Image (cartoon, rainbow, N blue to C red; front, top):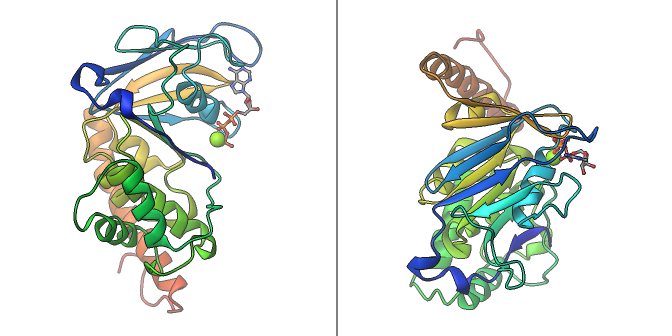
Length: 268
Ligand SMILES: Nc1ncnc2c1ncn2[C@@H]1O[C@H](COP(=O)(O)OP(=O)(O)OP(=O)(O)O)[C@@H](O)[C@H]1O
Ligand SMILES: [Mg+2]
């Protein structure tokens, strides 16, 4: 299973709350120093990781997931709340990560999986399983039924279920999503669901709307952190127009995949 949702008891108390994640630079693919020497992501912030294919976005997320300490190919170091995490007592519950390849290997129904997962997290809220399913169904196309076997879910349905699970059951202090826009799910609704928490969120993306919707974006190049931008006022205005175009594109996609024909003009 590629959804790395792990136990998080050590982070249940307030003293262990994550206020910031710091990524200290290592080296690029060619062995030279990264141009950005440090990136800090605070609780409640969302950082977009952008860059061409192969530029090192997934590697960057993986360094955080592993709490790298100069021991990965990039040589980066990760600090939690400005301090090195205790590597010996490495806490496997720090991160909920949704990777680029998503699939379930458990052989049970969707509701059984969600119930077991909620129980393992000691979450006994009435209606939680139904809520997760309802949220997942706002993200994907054909509805996911509680009785469906996990293994017959499509790529998009699996991803939608994992995102809703990360938001409401996993409840890990850091969220990493590799290409949230993948597999045809509603990316803006997914971002809304995830940002509804006061956690550091990192999303790698190729989608310009998502890039401009978040406060900061880190641009990767040749395996290294190349530049970091805050979304400026001009980009926020630009985003308004871009979102209209995106909505139009999504509506057209919806029509075509529902078997309808496109009529009228492009602006209709
Ligand atoms: N700093 C680095 N030093 C050495 N190798 C690196 C570094 N960063 C990334 N790589 C390697 O480069 C390859 C491509 O990186 P990665 O998969 O992270 O790219 P990506 O930006 O996620 O691409 P895509 O958009 O296709 O998902 C991987 O094999 C990765 O391990
Ligand atoms: Mg990648």
